[in-house]
Image (cartoon, rainbow, N blue to C red; front, side, top):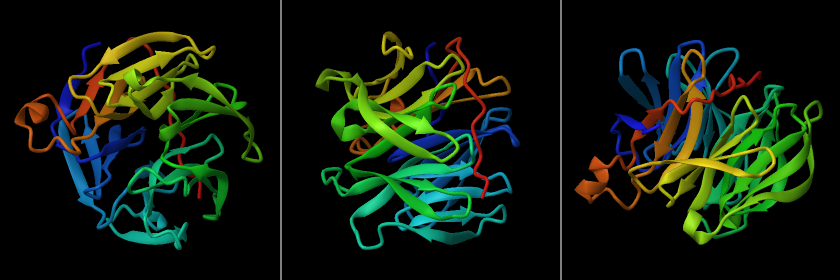
Length: 288
């Protein structure tokens, strides 16, 4: 389970890994550099497109292209490389930007915001419906991060990193409504800050810990199973990929570490992969 560094990108904030089953490649972003990466494990090649703005996440679209979570809301990155703004959010809050995002089983995107300082509860979690209309679902958020669902879609897990928790909501998959928020996993300062998250095929949660140099696996009952250590501290997110979803891809951040050669050699801002023995689930695509 020792992670292998496959792309030494030195990303300021690597984030949002998602497997594209059609191309058999991994999509991931470098938020602050505005880069949308595509890593091909068959060739080892990683290419990126400069979106011209900060990009919190890039979600594959059923009809082609990628939906980008940008500071102004949601944009469509077409296969020819053009970026078209589609839906605005928080236009009146100049210091906020979109952050992590994930698509639900009904083809809707859940994406949250944060302020650039990561201190103000002025952010929110939005649901982007397939008609490209965004609905605010959770308010008083500070750093919106990982989101995923349990195996029967009755629970939505959610991380506002500032709380140092994974919360859970009761979830109605047809209406896309969430209610009855309560803490599920709570962490200490020594654990690091919970960031990105994914749920595997057994319903276990995998959480990336920024400042914690690790990924942790937790049972649906909330029991800690095991950790995967990383050689670099700022672990941001993770996703299963590969033909059988048996490869775990892990993104990291080099923010604040770029002048440290040792940090770069240890993989700050790099993309990692390992095969932990568990498998993930096929990711959902946006149906708009």
